[in-house]
Length: 261
Image (cartoon, rainbow, N blue to C red; front, side, top):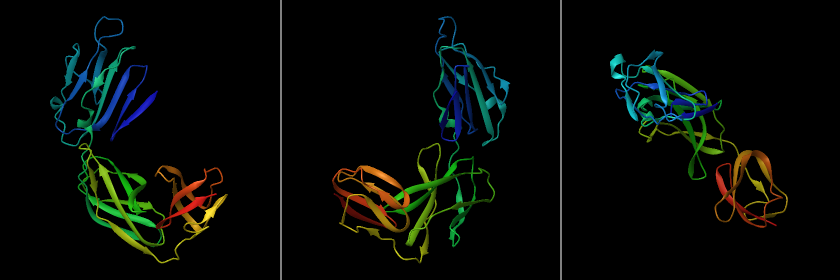
C-alpha cells in the first residue's frame, strides 16, 4: 500500500480499492471525478462513507458531490471520508484541500533557554498542522525540524531541542495551511557566548584530503556554480573525492571558501 500525505490529511490508495481522507470540516463539500469501471460496465466508485456512515449521495455519474452539510458538523470537526472503488480504476478527489486545516495560531510567548530548547506557547489553533522550526544560518532560513500541532483553541505548549552556532542565533516557527501561504511567528534570538569555530586549511586555503573544524558544526559545501555537493554535521569532512577546483563552505555562522587540490 502506498501512503500519500497531502497537507494534514492522508490519502491512501491501494489495489484493495479504497481512498481515505482525514481532515476537518470547513463548511465545504468534496467533489469526485468518477471514471468508468475497468470492465466498462458502471462507474468506479462503489460506496462512500463519512465518519463510518454510508452516504446517500448519487455516485453513479462521472462527477459527483459528497455533501458534508447534511451531517451538521461543527466548523473544525474531525472528518474521515472513505471512498471505496473497484479494481482497475481510480477515482480522483478534485478539491481535497477543503479538508485541510487553516493556520490560525497566535504566539503567546516564544523563547530559547540555555539548555538548548526552543519553547513556544500558542492560542487559537484551528486544526492540527505541523509547526516547522527554522534557523537563520548563512544568510538564509533553514528548516531544522518540525513538531505536530495540537490543533486546539486553548493554550498549547511546545518544546524543541536545537543546536547553537557561536554568536547570535535566530529562530522562528511557521505553519502552512490550506491557502499554501506560510504563517510565521516572530523571530527569537539567543546569543551563544562561545569561541567561533574555525577550519583548516582556512579561508582560501588548499587541501587534498580533509577539512578540519575546531569544533562540532553543521556544514554545507557548494561547488563554483552554486550546486550543493555535501552537507552534514561533524568535526571534519572528507573532500578527497571532490574534483579539483574552488568550493564554498558554510559552517558555524559564516561562509568561506577553499580550494581542492
